[in-house]
Amino acid sequence: MKTIKNIVIMGALSMLALSGCKKFLDLAPISQMNGNNFYQTAEDMKNALTAVYGALQYPGMYYSSMHVIGDLRSDNTWIPNPNAGANLQEVDEFKNNAFNSISSTTWSAHYQGIQAANIVIDKIDAVNMDENLKNQYRGEAKFLRALMYFNMVRIFGDVPLVLNVINNPQEGYTYGRTPAEQVYAQIVTDLSGAEGSLLYEYGNADIGRATKGAAMSLLGKVYLTQKKWDLAAQKLKEVIDQTNLNKYQLLPNYGNVFGIANENSNESIFEVQFKKGSSGEGSPFTNQFAPIGSGTAVTALGNPLGQNIPTDNMNAAYEADDVRKNLSMRTSYVLNGNTVMHNYVAKYLGVPAANLDSDNNWIVLRFADVLLMYAEALNEQGYVADGPAFSYLNQIRNRANLLSKTSSHTTPTLRVADQAAFRLAIEQERRVELAFEGHRWFDLVRTDRAATVLGSLGMQAHHVLFPIPNSQIEINPGLITQNEDYD
Image 1 (spheres, rainbow, N blue to C red):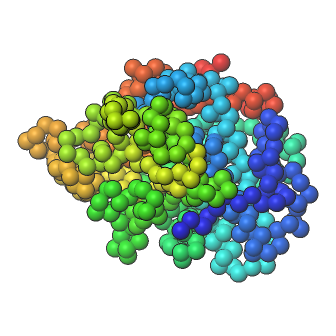
Image 2: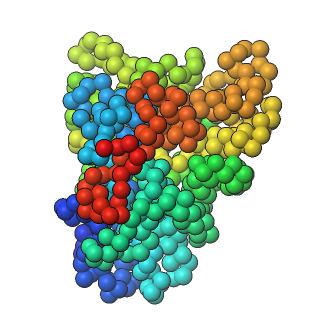
């Protein structure tokens, strides 16, 4: 059941999607209805919170940008056909500049979502409603704001930290780029607050809402990104310990993690909810990831766009007998009785109701990610031959029908003899386990491996950050500056 929907709220919240001017405050709902009089009841706050969830479906977030940045920017996928889109190809080839639409749509969508979250956080205290529900809604808004800022700080570095509702355009001109360290501090504050306010699970009517486990898992990832290994390990272990309470588990069959029938499973921790045939709430992935020219061979309905095609390098990354490969990608399709050799993503195959209108959710956090992050954090605190970190790594491998890796295995490819080797083992396992889920680019940047792995594809040192949209610099040149080495 998909109940967290992209509802367009009348008045103030609808302004989030209507602004056509190129201003930093595209995100601001400029309306008298943004005043205190509009937010009076629990239902008002529920609608306001729904608008925050709805922002996750924007093209500049999980509808498109996050997989473009997370996978297309890496060695996982590429654009073999330029007809898939010039802006996407520029990102793929490290040629994107400040005028590339990926930067601008990502920036605008995230700040629209942040503004919507700020409205909930700012207005809810004055509303007469059940206190437990009030705390829950506030916690959900803080989780979502933290997720959006986490994306932004990883993509752009220093970004404006806006924690208040913007009521008029002039207020926006006071915000410059906040140092990333301060942005991270606020993310930690928000997630810690959310953790204390949220439940581990909700009833069927509320499936898709942020949970305590989602806040804890994201906080663990934030600490890992900051290289705070001890804090990351502590928080991620708290999530893992919930397995004993049947909160989260690694599903026995990798194939049961994906597909429309398997959404919001016990392995899933947070998903962006999509619903086909429901006023623009469907997901585009089935069409986006189908090869150009494949007709109806891959997607039964709509236009195949060829926007996220697995590389041959990705295809070769899987070990023999790894069951995840055919569940994650395919290397051919049959069209008009002829076999066409062409890689494509299989995790998001579905039957759209119309073009770009399928049911597939986007998984942001799942338990396998948590297990691998915990193994990474343990190893960074100190390599232990065949210690606990190996156990968590091998849980993931064994489910994939692969042999365990050990510190002294007689087979060289299964031997992980020291800390450096374990780092590479985790990198490899994350690549194939989480393939096409938007993690690869962020993993390589987090571990300082991006330039080494992607240098042959054109990456240079400054590419670890995306360029600030030129439109933002033009409106506020005194405070919004460009990232280093971008023209």
